[in-house]
Length: 274
Image (cartoon, rainbow, N blue to C red):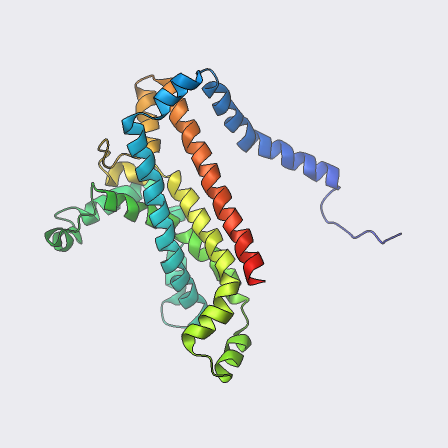
């Protein structure tokens, strides 16, 4: 018989049972309650409430802005993580600590700060607005806020992988005559691509559920800068609980589908590069 390995935690049954109970109470039960509430609607009524013109505009802005914010974080978060891992410079630890600032800062404070910063008379707005770049009460403001809250996910996901990346492989590629771009494309990118996709997925998921900062920086204009989470709040304030439930159910399903696609891309990326 094989030798049993020592495990510091209790047996599998106890730990697995605790895991399932915890996951059920925190995640599965609320989701089930949402769909149970939505089941009170007929399909025709559900479709009518979930696909109003205002709701469709809110879905489009929510997922479109979240996708763009995720892409921005995937690109610039990768560059930031690379600089923090590969280079030593004065103020590096301060910049590394500032990456986590969106985690600690209340989202409402972030929204107020961004709205003031990009307003017409704000520190940045006074220079950008005359150029036609309006960051407050516009869709651009929504993207900026979502990029702000999602940045730590992209950076922190990639940093451990970069720290474990062997530089000798890059040096060997350079010795064999590979240029910077070829070294990056053939040596570095295959190992980083799945992690970058994971960071993108986390930043995207965070952006889809964002509410606090958007309320202040977007202006919440129906059909223009109104996101789906805010529309749910509006429906609740109007005591339209079924309407809020229908929109929330659509948002949940679309989020699951999007994350499933991203996870499939991660698996495909791993198989393709290996």
